[in-house]
Image 1: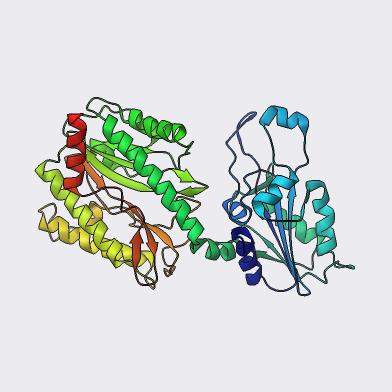
Image 2: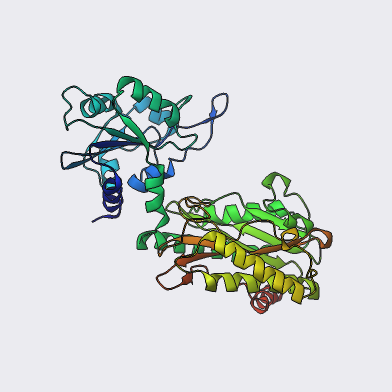
Length: 422
């Protein structure tokens, strides 16, 4: 079966009999006055359809042994297209989503009435209505799915409203080979962007020049969009976990380390990579100790990843290794708490969202893609180091999808030495 067909079939399998599911793409949100934020479809809707267009609706039905899939879109509007650009035709949407039944939104209410009515329903009496009750999924202005459920209950009081979010989450956590390939492509593109930064970074640049350059490189090489706002943090700024883009004004000084946390998207899938580089081209002896402690932890946790563990287990492993290495290198005392120098989690799920669906206590299974990102942050030394890779959970362990992005001290210094000789 085709990818989207298979995803929808798996979701319908998880629905109770006599059920209808409605998943909305969402609508644009107002930033100020008549200025809107860029539109991104609800990732659950995108996962099931491949459609990135606002005010679109997916309807699934499972009743009387039948399975039906419908997609509803706005009608063609010449004036709107002249203002905001081309929109999908029904034929184009059908080709992308692999859904045969594509109709106008003007038919949605009648279709739902046929399905949900307690009087002469077209597909037998429907007992359950599934909605994506995530926060902030807007069905229309000032109306979220959490509010619209009340409208359905008022009109169809016989229905049991169920949250489809955990059902789709369970599917999204396990990546298909196509999804893994998309992630690998996003990672490989990110590697090219990092290499461009290494060639062009120098003492005296502002942090924002490098973050801007990474975004520009993506836009001019395959029109890659950012997976998230690029973090470029030099010196003491690198001890701030999410150094804000609005504050990336510092000039990079001789002897400092630069921490990058960045990634591009490919077909909606996000890379999430962190690397730390010396602006001088070589690490000082103290910087080497901090960096090597983090690198050892990064590699040990990647090797530790396997089905049956949770992200919480990986965090405990990371704290154990970081403390061992930090004490070994004289970076902290045995009686100190590692949480003083390591204040975040080592991992999260990765996919259509950078911080993808999936909890810290959820047991890992083959097909999960997670990050491994230990770090050490010494405010008093003005040094922060984070090394982050993207990792696929396999049947017997793990595979580092970002293994091609260099991280060994010798590799980094060799790369930067070549740059200086250009």
